[in-house]
Length: 100
Image (cartoon, rainbow, N blue to C red; front, top):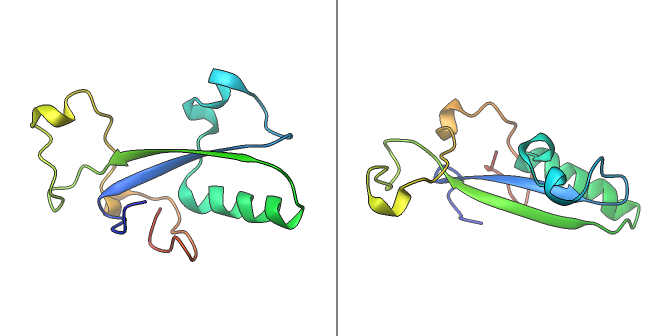
């Protein structure tokens, strides 16, 4: 993960035997989690010694303070996340503190 949580938003999918779906359905937006929620679930699964698979996706944040030029061809067709200050997701605990 990028060390500056203001640059990128991460979405997570935690797949385990109690997941409500699998395959492409599971990896859709319906089951994606923010960083804090995903890491809380992972912690609970670890305590129970449950097996899981962890997937993530990194999106650049649309924020004029970031070094990204949304008009550059590099970013054509890319999905953008909200600016950090506009993101209402909770902040994750250590070791990912600062990420939402």
